[in-house]
Amino acid sequence: LCANSKSVSASIRAFGITSTMQFRGYHFGTAQYYAAFEGLPQADTAILRKATLEYLNSFDNKLWFTKPIQSVVEGNALDEGEVIDTVDALGKVNGKQIVGSDKTFQAVLKLMETLTASAEKPGTAQDFREAMGRVEQKLLSPEFAAQLVGNQALDFMKQDGITEIEESVMANAVERKLNLSLRADEEDGKLVINRHPALVACVSNFTNFLDLFRKTVRNI
Image (cartoon, rainbow, N blue to C red; front, side, top):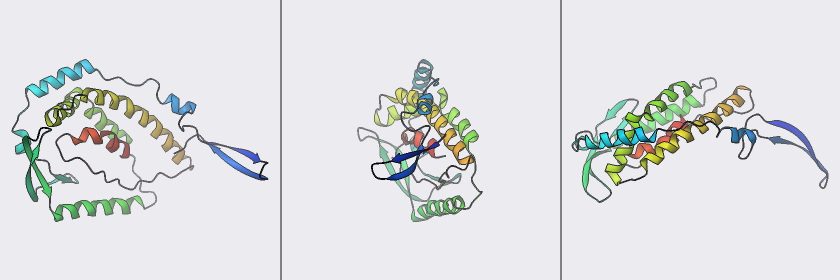
């Protein structure tokens, strides 16, 4: 929301009102906002294309049948529910999915309630930046990025997966810089960051994670 703010007194003489205005240092168009876009990392698209082709050529067509989409709560895979077929962009069956039962839904809801209660307790905030940075680095490595791109091509014939990885490498770096400024303001007592959990509805296919990538990383 704001960072590196400074207060200036502004007299609005037309109305006879004196007020204090806050100027935010990294709002859209400011010098600090612009600086966040400098020196961005670049994805090696040649290596990524090569790794993606290797993944596609070695892909096991039975994988999405033997390892269906399912809910995972706190590291535990939940198998209870109705097993249904998944289809690709042309309507061809390409795997299985477990539609979670009410018990599964309650497990997700309970976790959300627990995380919300924890977020509302003062002094309990955890800093996940370093750990999440390592996860992000792994996801954007050629090995795992190739799987994301390849799965999209297999699942719904997406043609610009390479571009999305290329964009993510740069966009995540920008957001990381802005988040660092936001956190610095919180440490200075200028604002409080809301840490309530975010429930993001996803597309139920084998490639939804790339679409959620920025949202997931951003929230954590």
